[in-house]
Amino acid sequence: MHQIDKLIGKPFVNGGRGPDNYDCWGLVCEVFKMYGIKLPDYKISCEDVSRIDGEIDEQRNRWCRCDGEIPVPALVVMRFNQAIFCNHTGVYIGDGRFIHTAEKMGVHIDHIDSPAWRRKIEGLYVPGWLNG
Image (cartoon, rainbow, N blue to C red):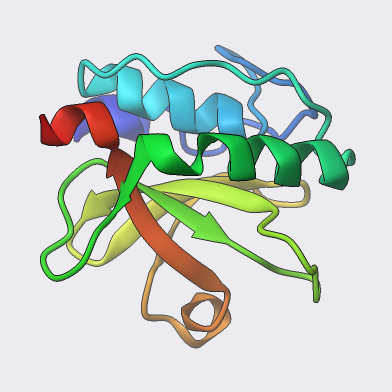
């Protein structure tokens, strides 16, 4: 998707909502918007793990886990740095790829089955209201 290419290389900034920088949820909202889907914005610091976990737990029933074929876009939920809670998100964009942002690399695309991410991805989800 040509619009997504314009996001590559934008820096990670905690609380970033674009267009010049993004945090992981800000990027998720931007990419879903490119597909015509407006997501709620959660203004939580990426360092406030307990609030993030609480929000994820509260919103869990609004998202449907993807089993089988993965639709585009789908929320990629990850856990890294030995976290107890899920602490990172990205967006599945097809062909086994997902876009996300990280502090040192900014916005970039990775493969969901790469050794670096395969064990960190907890699941892929779509907003429940899209499943009608």
